[in-house]
Image (cartoon, rainbow, N blue to C red):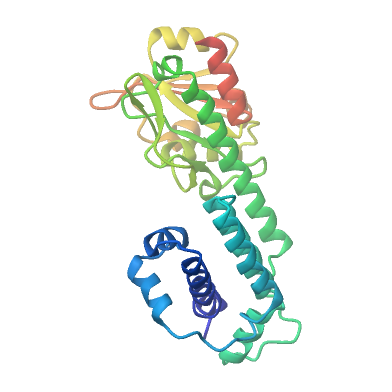
Amino acid sequence: MNFICEIVPSSFLTPLRRIIAQKLSSEGLKQTEIGSLLGVSQPVISSYLSSASSPPSSITSNPLFKGLVSKIITRVTEETITNIELIEEICDVCQTFRTAGPLCEAHRRMSEIDFLPNCSICFPSETSRKIFDDRLSVTKELYEAAIKLVASGERFASLIPEVGCQFVGTTEDTQEIKDIAGFPGRIIKVKDKGQIISYPEFGQGATLAQILGYFKRQSSKFNSLISIRRTDNILKIISPKKEVLLTVEADKDWIQTLQAFSTQEIQEIEIIADAGGIGLEPLIYLFGKTPNDIIEFLLSKF
């Protein structure tokens, strides 16, 4: 059984890299420069340049493939393309070739599976496309909100716990923990400024995801949650006009704690203030309709 993803490297990406490498070399670029651009080592580029040209295939002779090569060469030599744009250009053509194109035909020839003429495995379904778009929206919104926080400098840094700040978000109709995104490594404090370690991912921020997921299952209006330091002063500043759940010690089983509240009570909670304990830092969990709502509230208070 062959997946089309196994065919793409040998039938599309390697020929594309080889042809681009040969053309860029003829334009005077060094092998190390070409390797950096194409994401391969200098010895690989050397092998591309020393190998004989392969006979044209249905893919490399395709006008769309030739146009892609020409566009990349022009934009690289004129320094008008970024790495991200380069990936977008290549992936767009690859997707076209996978959907009733030459890669699709190559897959049919190489696979032992008798695909139906109307096979649509490589076409993203409406459901999968919506899931992708929703997830992309969540991570983008989280990241942009975190950038605003970090940009506030010491204002936000003063709220970052010693263990780092976790910030999670999800979509309106999500209830599952796996569909909640957070920051790997959290947001930390470096020299009195916040620092984002990495782009948000799904499956991160286990504790906050567990809490937010439970709230969502109780039809909470909140889609985002952040952890910040808990001090008497911070709690005093953020708690007026917000419903607060206070714990008297560090909570080690949030679901058990939350199950003691009715659905209506859960829907009204806007802040959880965890008291902490031996080896466990006191924290405040602040809910928001969106990540940006949380940011605007925090920046209006501090």
